[in-house]
Amino acid sequence: MMMHTTLAQLRALKLDGLAAGLEEQLAQPGLGAMSFEERLALLIDRETHHRSDRKQARLLKQAKLKYPQAAIEDIDTRPARGLDRRVVMSVALDDWVTTGQSILISGPTGAGKSWLACALAQYACRRGYSALYQRVPRLSEELRIRHGSGIFGRWLLQLAKTDVLVLDDWGMGDLDSTTRSDLLEIIDDRAAHRATIITSQLPIEHWHAWIGDATVADAILDRLMQRHHRFTLTGDSLRQIKPKTTEKEQKTDPT
Image 1 (cartoon, rainbow, N blue to C red):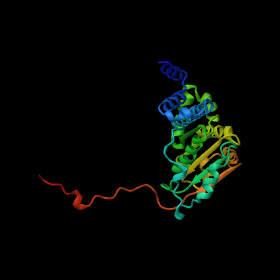
Image 2: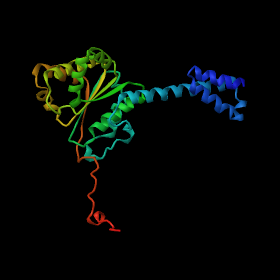
Image 3: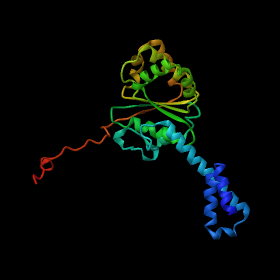
Image 4: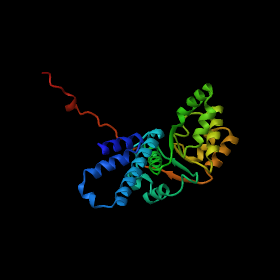
């Protein structure tokens, strides 16, 4: 009865990992030979890992990644893709997040740009950093809504605190002057402080023309290029094309 009360109190204190570890110890008589200090160390280690797993799950949920299961361990580095696994892993394991570096990913449609960006952001979450995924073509409308509801300033401050920002499909569609200015504010807040990942079908050399306003384009690109890594993907689309149904498969049994 006393142990039941103890377990209930641990859970009331939100020490679920410690409670689970204690239940496991009670079910393993062999642990009785261990000292109090050893058993306590195991319980604290269990609680630490439990909190780490819970934090990781929360960060991944908040990131809203397009491909939440993408992982750097699964990166396809066949020669035709133009990716060097050693380079990708070197960047992923480096301090690009804490030093506010940019990762610029370009290549044709279906080459896996968004997947690579999500894999890098997912690994950042696994290391305890916050992340957020945004599609640039939808950003204009979202920014208009935030301006209209009066929450743009608060959202901008929150975004500035996000460790990794993924801007997917950069360079698709035209930019209006308001979105262009907002992008500058977003990028300026992050320059040399927070990491940014950008994916684009448009070659980086054409970004200046896409942004439109020469002064704003200079400012945005200057901030993105301060410290950056560049990946240019190549090869055919990785998206699976559903095979056509054969004439035999199209026939049905009239009965």
